Image (cartoon, rainbow, N blue to C red; front, top):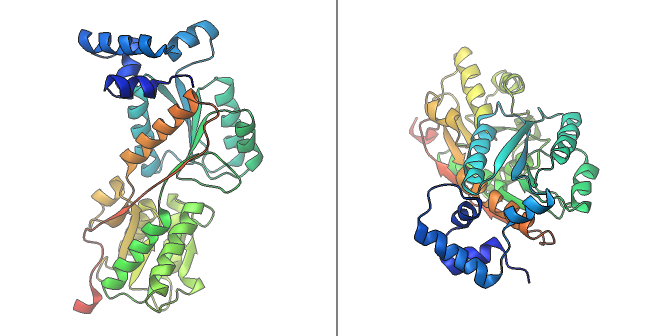
Length: 335
């Protein structure tokens, strides 16, 4: 089997990023380390990708990143983490935001292919499976970020969304809440999985969530306002709301304040993502944290493996979320 950058890094006892910097003559690497890496490369008869690129013109050292909405702090933080990880291995990022529009998604995919990016990280929910299947057929290296679909045999790096929803439901139950509502993105697999996990937590305690208590909303300000309005106008309001993104949760808290509904004393709120919204919210937003740094690191690693090994079989990496407790949830049994 042809040696890869991973083989060189392992035998030299250094990181992949260090090998990449030696190959591309970037960064500050000691002469001793450079000599060691070059010696290992000669031993393994490893031909650096940069040399192959110079001969063939095929390698551009660019990665395309497709996100649904860069205005959403979660995807902004993801983009920054991906760029930082890509820079460490000598790659740059081309970022494309689709605004949840299928036409833009298709246009950007074509644009990235024309730009001859070496790989693509996709964080948009596939609306046209044929476009993504064409990527597979053409053996374009790509990773599905926080997105999974049974029809696609791609590399997948995601958070365990169902587990996250379960954590949210269990936490509210432990705080004595029994009348709850959920605002989630029913058009995204992640939103559905978070809802499913939340429902399972309630079901395990003999509680069923009514259909009218589930509000559909895209994670955008106007949509979140409409969803908040539906809950705040309910005759019998819930004592707690689970929002499947921090953005939705923050908008709900703001709309509640306008309606003279106290958070958390009238309605407790829990979000999902642990973005800047959760930190600057007043009161601080209890949320389910996604490991953004780890998601980005694994995504870049998996994409690089696919670039180095075009026939690499698809892998699914599922990371565990955790609950971050702040001040937006109270124990109703103490009231």
